Image 1: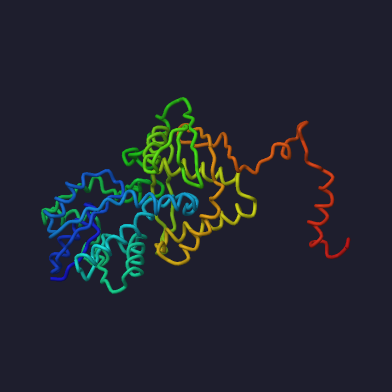
Image 2: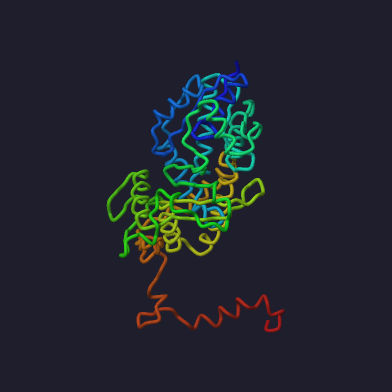
Length: 393
């Protein structure tokens, strides 16, 4: 029997995939990646074995996920189409990397995933795997099996005694990790339908959030968040703490019509309290410490970085080159940002840095003004000269 390593989540698609691959004659080895889902991985492992997996690898990737994927994206200021902070997208190349490693260890000739043919994750898994080992066969059961809907998969799971938690009444597809949570399917597929409150987990309904604002001070060192209200935290604890604080105040909900890589538009719901707070604070600190041209160029690089991440191109040379550029820009992104969280809103109300380029003496219109306004006339003449056709030259 050929060995195949399946990226297994314990959800509907990958649970059905174990039995389906087994029926096709494969020895299925399940690989469970812990990227901060907070789930009972012992129970998920048992589910994989009961469904038919011959072996299960459970690998704790949380530290690597934070250090090598989330923090670089934070420093990059990566946000796709101005809304999506890429929580799911960032985890996929990491999972694929270790899936390839396990395939080598197990001497498997193939890897498999539970992604659909219309999604982005298939690209992220497969491109990463093909870069790391183009000789591995890649199997995508959901793209080729006989089921045409999630309802048919649920019927198949019942017929084959596959234990799954998804029901026809609650058909949502959910992905969760340390950095955020995404929800799709079901009634959410109608872009006119308001998301029901039941789909949210990290965040409180803004209407039910506290009636008094919550102020926090977030401190950065070279682009990395290190302290909350003066107290030091490890990066993963920063995320955990900000998810709790932000979630309690209804911060971090996103309802997006998104352009998928395969060409279709999709309706996506995201919860990312920590990421939202960090992104807003980091961007504001950069505004304070970076010179104008670097700041403007960095904005373009941030968009490029987000696109590469979304498109599954994490392991490409250009992404590594952008990392080097971004690292250079972050040398002075050190300081404190004060934020006001209130009923779903996150507003910057203060910022300071030892590398601040802001000068009150130059900016003020008060008595402390040291700006020499006599420079302005000559500056404007020179600035407009290229557009005057030589009339005043």
